[in-house]
Picture 1 (spheres, rainbow, N blue to C red):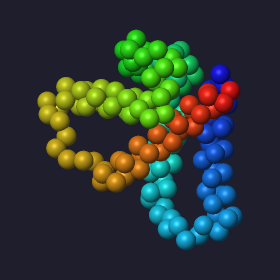
Picture 2 (picture 1 turned 45 degrees about the vertical axis):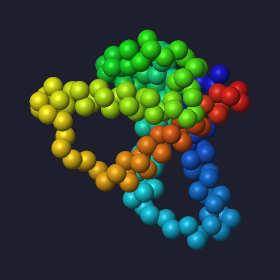
Picture 3 (picture 1 turned 180 degrees about the horizontal axis):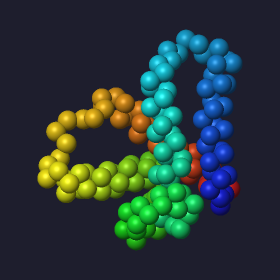
Length: 146
């Protein structure tokens, strides 16, 4: 199975290569919205470096969380490495829901209420999640190939 840095290099190489190839093949008819690209890139970065399928083992990805890696301890107990955490369809969704519930729980404990409105428009949340899911899919694909 490839190591953490191999996953990172692969993910970023694909993330850069695909738009360049599309541009070279004259796909200029695609409307490029810089905000959407930026939100997708941030989601992809988070998905590649922080919310990876390898959070269920003692990996470099979990060490990046520093002292907050303790938040992932129940996740490590619930999910065995290479099984549901490495599922292309729902692996990333489960991790995002898991950390979102923790964030909402802390928010509730601090403010005794939940946020009344969305911080970002829902289209950006969706694009952000797509970035995380693409990073997750590339990680799993590389694990399958090697």
